Amino acid sequence: MDGSASGAQTPTQADARGGEDDPHLARARYYSPSNIFQVKRAPIPRRNFIEECERARADDTPTGWITLDIAEEIGVETPATTPLMLARYAKVAPGETLDGHFAASGEIYYVISGCGTATKPGETLTFAENDVFTLPGGGATTLRAGDDGAVLFQATNEPELAFHGLAAPEPANSPTVAARYPMESWLAELTSARDVNNRDENRSGQALHLTSERNGKTDSLHPTIKVAINSLDPGCSQRQHRHNSVAMTLPLQSRRRTFSDRGRTAGLASLRDDDHAAHRTSRTLQ
Image (cartoon, rainbow, N blue to C red; front, side, top):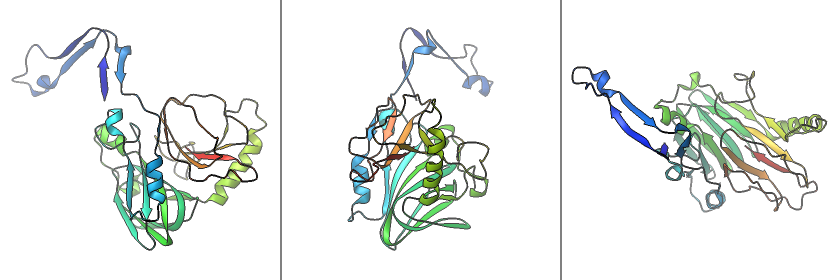
């Protein structure tokens, strides 16, 4: 995944003593760049996946996964939306099922429209529009839509496991558990947090972080993926801040003039345009 390094450097060297009689010595290599701090990697582009979003929501799109893959652009050898995450839309026609098997340690979903069930071996949960839910990594995943069909957004850490050469855990051993966060619950929690946060002059924004019973001592429901629902009041802007990672943002509700200006953001098309709503609050899943 490393790009070329600027400045003088020596090529990768094998051990000069040879290794005909020692396979471990033969595998060793030495590399000496003149300035390790100038090693360059492929930049993470700003990207809006508008066409993929529209295709997932189109009535004539058949049941299937729509993968948001820009691996070639970012120098990753396996499908990826960011170096460590892969996102998809799941389109499930009315009454149909969609199967998947993901080499990940956790699966995160947002229900754009519709309702149905999500099944892992030995466990089934129901979902409805605007729910966030998680499933353990490993094993087979089956999404079944109700009478109106369903469209979901999914994020996993498949590129991370591929980078380390790791297989997915058994679902029972996954760090992410099956859990559901219905809209009425997360909206109530977000409103409560908003009232408290507004009294803090140093607040960086309005955000509700999702965690679980297994990871309750942290503010993250997955060891390497932080999931938050962010809210922005009308006419307001979030204070500038830095992500020591890549931000993948799914706009849930926004005005036409809501925008983001980040150096490393994988953005997705807005799901709802509530320009005529009374409060016109913008919300994103990140």
